[in-house]
Image: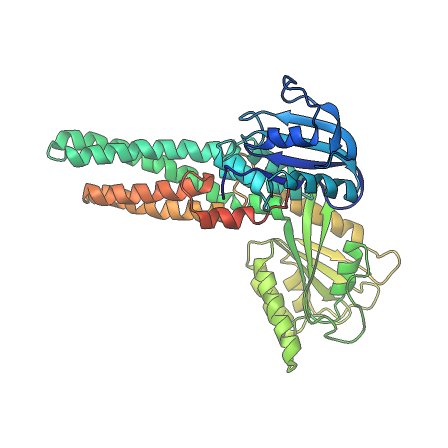
Length: 459
């Protein structure tokens, strides 16, 4: 990627709208503006909108729009930036972009404006990622977390830890030169150990909070499990408010999972319907059942549907015994409550081990017992996304923290065993590199390519 090139793209979504924006960034942005708006005053103030006639390269009028020139480095990318705020018709925007490209600018790659902001030091990598998260946020919690990261909360926290470790590295490397002076090294060993322990403690807190951040960004994974014909797909449709899942009396109708997003109390819910759990010789259904169990293991919240009129099978009891001993929240839905109960005393004793149980008649219109269940899902989702302080939100962040913790663990052990100073310094530097990759202080083109490929063109 050449920062010497001028890039351009339509920065607003495809389709028709009141306003559409063509964004231009790079050293030639001001020249492009002069070609498309020939009467642009030389001394017109930067960062100020001006009503302008946009002309193509043959000096034919394309549109009358607001234009703004933002002189770098005080712009989003840190470069000279021009934005042409046109009427939002696709033909207008296409013609304006064609005219811009005709001046020698090139079309921007996905995320290239934000990538340039990172490369020019306007954003660290956590802030750059937050731009994409802010655009893609579909819930209040995701929006709030993205704003916190965009304002630098995570990046500043990591930077503080890096500074603490950097001093530890300096002390260790100084001790390498003066290791023959034992009294000097002993004093520095205590200080290095204190700094290592301080950073480890903070990283453990970030690690423990990862699930809260991940849930805020991606949504709470709510998986509906249970035997066939217990009403799982009916429940899925009722919660989602559509006839998304096929519902029949035939056992094993659902052979794969369905996933949809809904919002409760400002939190995104990733609701998943699964194949009924049972013993079967059907190869296709068996694959679906295996996927159901895997989804259950990854769920943040499980809803277990029970056909109250039938009761529990031995397989059901085995599955529920495992869930009862797990620390994840489980909501029991006793469906078909209008029918005579088929639950045995053993079934009732097992189900009473779960705090949250709801009797429903999902086939009724409207479904009976659904409101109480929805309220509890909302309460549980709020608890699962609650978190104070700085939160990690991406697997990449977590991996950096885990790698740093592993390296610091070795460094701490090396200090305790009075190992060679050089080995301790290596471990500390590996921890620094791992934390540096989170903010982009230490990164590779491969990492940057993966991150910015998630962005839309124009951002």
